[in-house]
Length: 487
Image 1 (cartoon, rainbow, N blue to C red):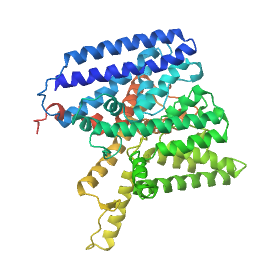
Image 2 (image 1 turned 135 degrees about the horizontal axis):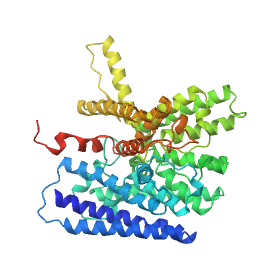
Image 3 (image 1 turned 90 degrees about the vertical axis):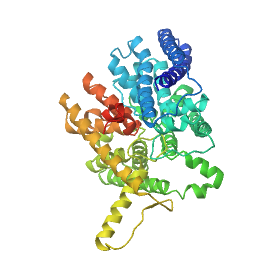
Image 4 (image 1 turned 45 degrees about the vertical axis):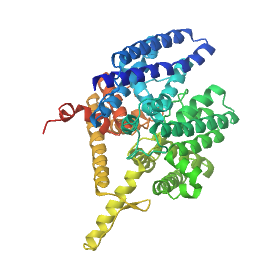
């Protein structure tokens, strides 16, 4: 196990180091030579450690089969390592001199949360801003999934490892090998990112802004190079382009291939996708109606645009903003909190509980209500026409309970800093669901720099735990994990 872990971490760090070559391009274009030096040193550190670990962990052909507990350890540690290595340029350039704050920023990047401790992002070098968005894009579909797609040789272990990282209750295979599945998923991911860049260029954005915001959109991350986020562009066209691509990013990516292979009609028969569309429409209608009734906006078009954008960006856990929704009526803020909890579809780049779990839970509640009046009847819970097993139903209920418990525990722990309940609760919810902004002191126009080093670290780890669907992260803290023979 040790040799295999060293080999895996070595390959992973070599890959992360290689990815830092890309932000060096804007660093050279904009003559940010201090950033060039920082990236080069960070690349050297990552490659040196990575090569050393790979050499030390050189595998034999007779390596034993990977155990489930091993893949959880590999994934959880890999995400922490990635965040540490990615934070090095920020510390070296003194852009974020506090290592804990830099670690938080990169956890926010790889987990696609978009929460930031930086009060004025315009002051950051453009190469570092691009690196933030690149980390989000890498984390969106899964850093390890991308490694699997590019680097062959993991064989059957690929599916086992990636299943501990991929968001959603299940991991679907689109090809005979998981590496083929990873390549197909990333092909769709790249194409959609490229298309958004083109559409944003037509909206008047320069190439740098178009690339940066497309990376953040498709990752449902939310990092922007402007403190006022997407509101900076003041363009309905830009708002709706990002809204459209954010909706796509919140969908199950496997459905794109279903649509290509079996037709669009088959794609829209998916229960989760139908629920997703209805959910977006209902939330948008409620917020738009309230904003009009309360006279927050003078025109229906403005209210609809602002309402739809905020609904889509929150439910997809992207976290972009075009308005300070912390100033909206309480009804709107309550809807936003619910959207933060649920998230979007499974096997998307979104965070949160995932709508497939929410839909299944609603069906369980409906079944229990029916059984109260028809106790002898038999009601099977179905998803896409197939009966959901009792084991799956149990797992979903356990996950929902685990999610709520983690949310409350995180809120309790960071409350030691003394901020308001709304601030602490929405900060924890935002990090756990990988949303980005919260309410009150961590609202869309604020940042997370208000927290102590202790709370910052707690929130950073909460982001990773939420992105890895809780179990993958928390299981490594179990005594049974380190002592599997323990009763």
